[in-house]
Image (cartoon, rainbow, N blue to C red; front, top):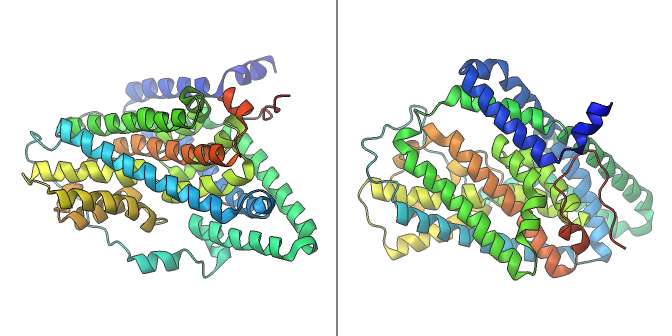
Length: 425
């Protein structure tokens, strides 16, 4: 028991970081065998996270919509959230274009081979995307984890509870208790994050190797640099402009960022991000309950903004094309609007880049060159996505008086079994 207690006294981010280092060493030592022996640990962790994500969002959104009725207008909060989604996406496109223009990753890479399994994606039209938000069978949407459809149906139920008033008081209380129960289950599962991190990183290092990175090393470094600049300077600047200490934010958001990097999945990271935003950073739980899941579906600064913008310049440089000012504007507009329009479509990064390349009139084959290194790229893209998904609720909560500054200013980095910090006197 003493060993168990000592383990939980170690800050969560340190446990995850230690597992990351040990996993990298194990992958290097075991080579291909790491994929066979240790990948199941990572797979189990991701499956557990996916298991809790849909019921967590379902009950949390119903409870949030019914609870926010007496605090702030849901429509007003949603509008402000969408506005910040768009603003930060536009800034991300600018960072991606600027970084690729400076480093020129498409020059000097020789004759690349298109990935053997590459097929241009068929992107659904905007009308079909909007229709797909509405579930024909809400129970099927819950079973299949279609998050936008789950949010839509849960939101309708929440509004129905508000409309019925006192007649649904007991049902609202039951939904609130179910939401609390799912939060507790989430805390249990998050304690397995170090184990999952160890398995995922060991398998990646052991089976991936570095030979696949060498031809496109400049592109990999450019993407990581662009994402780091966006996270540190753009997000940090927005926080400072709102009178918030950026270091406190990154400390509180660290668990979500770590899980995003090792899992490469915004959906799998969403429960951790939600708990980080509420427990560590002091965002009102009812507002965060619909802002964070919504962001996990449509807020993709890494996959939907930086990566398509960089890929556009990479393709243009590789084929010796010069992008005109109208083409650059199209890349900006397609990246910002497309990230909303392709919400819920699997393979967001590939879909978004297909949309942007098509809109700018650039060869789609250029995307096929990058698929061989996509797993390594996706780690940093997803970290950027999830950081933005946590940033926007903090900014909106600050503007709307829904941020507990006492919790934010002492920003914990733990999201596990311990109880949330009590408000300062």
